[in-house]
Each structure stands twice: as structure tokens, then as C-alpha cells.
Length: 364
Image 1 (spheres, one colour):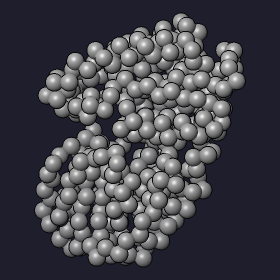
Image 2: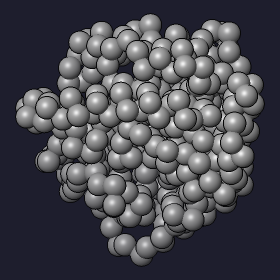
Image 3: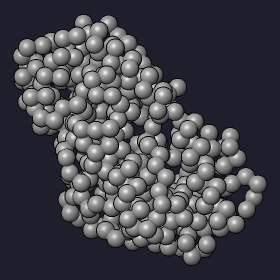
Image 4: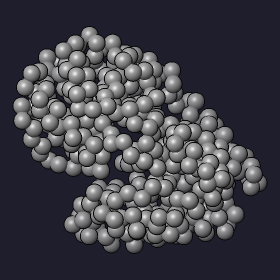
């Protein structure tokens, strides 16, 4: 093993995906300062990722898959020169863990990162059950068993990893607090907002009637970012449906007066890492959230945010925040202070560095 640790980081998605951006890429500079050099290599490029959930666009760009497969072959060669292979979920979007099996045969230690309950089968909103079959259902358990160490996004994932027989180190999905900063405004009309993806928009949809009712009694506007829809109409509410763009991610959060974080309560959502709550708190945005899984334990209910269990609680909490600007400001400041106390990048990068060094040392 060289004096500086060489790490090859493989991920399914490019930097445009939150999992790649916040579980690996944002730590690269901080790890380099600690003697760990990380080379990041995603399977999908930006164009394929952009087309992934639009079948017509994906067909047109399908020849790019051949190029990306060739890149993965090159990554196998790169793995022979790496001290550790750091795997964010999986090396490939589909099929059995061929790349990982070769890496293991080469004697390279694998550190697996799991930020969601990907070990649970779930149908794609676009491709249905076909997506689950293509992703090879037994892959996650195999990867956990093959790994030297597992980094888990929360306690629920860590418990599953340990049930398979491997210890897990919990590293929450966080943001750089020097990048996500508060931006208080004096907007006359409060902006309620939700920022997500086409696959998580389903969690917001049951709230639309509640927002319509609130629009009858309160002056408000609604900003929906990343739903996949160009136009969303809600009676009594002015709605801006905006396309998510990496370059505008921080400003999108800063543009909100009240954030929404609704979730269904099922096995998959109980395995989510509560990332949106951390983004809201970092940006100083008060928010209302479903108390599902780890979200029930994040922040301080009534101080940094409000928890809502049913439509009546959602309606009441949002009405309270709409009426009281000073409460919104106080809650936003409390959320920011909580993020600064509990989600500092420096603490999390030290845990990741320790895991990577430990994996390399055991194979040295």
C-alpha cells in the first residue's frame, strides 16, 4: 500500500444524483487533505441520467450504454491499482454484480455505501416491476457480504447490514454548511415549497388538496421543483413547477419560506436518511415533516420544524407558519443552529477516512 491511500469510487449515477454528490463527491477534497486520493467513476453519464426516466429519450441515447460499459471494463483495470474500491450502492445500474465479483477476485477490499433501503424491492414509477428484475434482487445482500466495511445512511440500514453479518458505520447524508446557507427574505407572500424527484413526487400528491384549502384562506404561492411535470394546477394556489437543475439547487432551497417533507409510512421510506430535513435546516427553512423512520428523530419537533401525522395536522401546522413570520424566522434559525451542531462535514469525513483506512489496512 502506498503512503497515500488510493481509492476508486464507483457509483451508478453521476454527480447530478444526490447519492453520488453527497455521499462521495463532496468529500473528495477533504479526504485528499487527509492523504486519501479518490477517483470518482459513475456508470451513467449526465445525458443518460437525464434521459433515464423518459423512455423515448433513453432509447435515442442507448448507444451511450456501450461506451459506459467499456468505461466499466477500464475501471476493473483501475481497481488493480487501487488500495480500496468504494462502492456507492452498486457498480452497474442493472444485472448481477459482475464488476464487484471481479474486484473481489482481484483481492481489492470493497467499502459499500448504502444511503437508502435498496435491499427492498420497489417498482419504478416509469418501468414498473421490470426495474426490480433488472436490478437483480439478490445483489444487495451479496455486496454486503463481500464488503470489508459498510457505511450506512441511518440506523435502519445499519440494522439490516448487521443482520446480514457485517458491522456498519453510520454516516448521515449531509451538506456542506458553507454552501447551504440561510437567506432570510421579506417576501410579502410566503412561498411554500417542495424539492425532490419524479420518483418522490408521489409523496407530495396527497397534500395537494390540503394546500388548495389553505389557498382559500391564506395568501401563499407554491414552488414544486423536480416533479417531472412542466405544469401543475391546484385550485386557489399559484403554482410554479420548476425543473431541478444542479446549479440552482441551493438557491431553490433559499427561495422557500416553508418547506414540505411528506412521506408514506412503509418499509422503504423507513429506510430513508432524512436528507431533505438536513437541507432545510442548513438553509434555515422551517418545515413540516412526516415522522417516518429516522425523520421522527431529526431536529427538535416544535423548535426546528413541525411533525404532521395526518391531513389535519398538515393543515394546522402550515396555517400556523403562514400566519406567523416571526415564528418562521425563529424556527429557521433554530434549524440552522441544529445543523451546525450535528451535521458538520468535518466530523463525517473523519468517519469515512477511518473506514477507508481500516479496509485497506486489513488487506495490506
